[in-house]
Length: 280
Image (cartoon, one colour):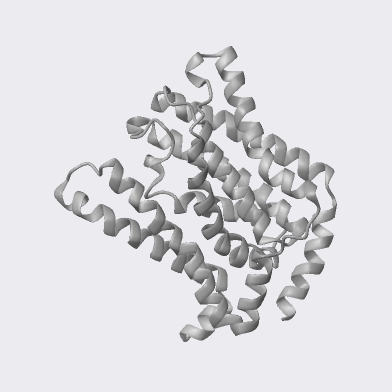
């Protein structure tokens, strides 16, 4: 099987391999000098890994879209990235769900468990979310999600993508949050983090299914990542951070269950929209 046949037969798998390769090689290029010397990766290097990681999903999407569908595919990708004419309630949904749930969890924990969970107010942290949301969703929602939706339903497609999205963060996940490095609590923190992003991926997929707007996916991703940086409590231990992430993941999955159990529209809309998408 030649490369072109492989790409046409397995576009999503090819996308994941390319996105991971670009991102992880970028991260390794920064970390390699410290890894080879057996020294701890400093915070500044850890932060530098993030922008290089972001190139993977976006570049892989643009490259494979051009190879598979040419200029028409790139025009479609750009059109979905600039599709802003949607009902205001979807903007409110994309922006407000993440901070509302984060605040609910942290305020509840600070009242019932410990004052260390009082939310922070690191306002400029929203900038981290803007870059991550804009670049990553060119790939996750722009390329991978529509093709996964041609094979399975919204929940399954989004959940699979969410697990892969969580794994994609592995090189930098220890630098996320306020309690890094997480030491012996890293496995629990990582599992809680994956549970959070998998649930968020389902919610992003749900918004996309109603709007067919990558822009809305970018906004929701930016809100999720940005407000985690803005509001994450700074006095927690690694174990406490893993704990509140786990509670937050439960809150997100409760919202996912409520949304999908009360909304019967996406399946019909997706069947129509993505049948049209793959006839192009």
